[in-house]
Image (cartoon, rainbow, N blue to C red):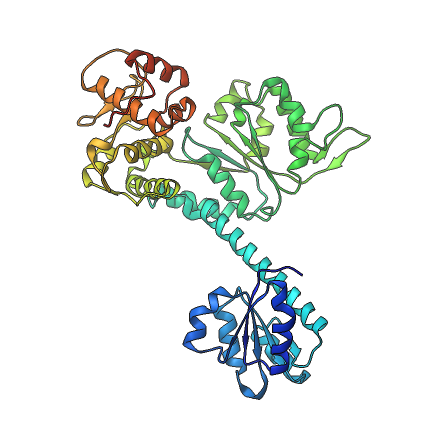
Length: 453
């Protein structure tokens, strides 16, 4: 038996102490003896232990004390040790103890109880970690903002999430539709099952049917089969070909997948997203009206960033904390003028644009506080402009002066930070690799360049 489990033994009998020390120390259990479970000394070290063995005879520890201890330490399994009075066992189990053993129990009996307690403790810890991960990544708090529009959005999502109803998420690119789909799934009854995504932008038209329904009558590896009892998220559903739409209508109505020989009945929840006005697509014949009804039992509209400018400050600080955590840097603060600059910006690329701006600001910042001159906007010439802001236009090679120099310095700094990885640098700058390559050629940049902005 190999283990890294740490056991705290409290007031246990000499006989049981000898069993622990002679039998279990050899098997990588770490065993510590203490006299009092409720002492200050014990409270300081208790977090280091997974199992507690505590003597319950002679009123050394009352049921009330043990109840308080178990409630305060939910990830520690407590095993009581007594002389074998079965009438007391129920009271201690109700107090929260994992089990009770006799102080003259055999080595095998003690081993069995310890192994069960060890497994239960590990399961609790793993579930706790999973819950923390879900809360951090898919909790409703990940929908940043307290504006009226965001408050209404959160309330609607909270209502539809626990149901099996189909939801159509509509909103501009970069508004967070994919994140909201994951949040809905992880707060649904199907959260323990798969969340499968069909990205219609990256899927060739010829592959839609095979991906969704399977190939040559075999549906076991299809997306719908993989999403059985779970959720299928159809990203940019407006791009589905009409023939695929018609097949999907039949599936949603019947739940049947496969041919007559190996037909299966599936249960799939549908979440979809779009950047288009679906009613207009129906009117032009580009989308099946029946399918729209089936996938939009509830429609959720996600607002553009420019329609909730009051959320910019909380979003900015959220992205700064996230980037600081990812890069292991201190959390940055912001000069108030930065927020004024962001409020006045003409937002075209939504929240994703704001995130990239903060990433660049963190890269350029030389202190713990981000200033106005750390904010660089990268946009196309067609985008609207606002006064009093420094804009670096990455889409053109025209012009000289401060814009040209600012562009050159930003590219050099980002390339050096990414060890001249063109793909990663282009993503951070919000431009294509071809555009980046053209800029490098224009400015005659070389890897040994080490300029600072």
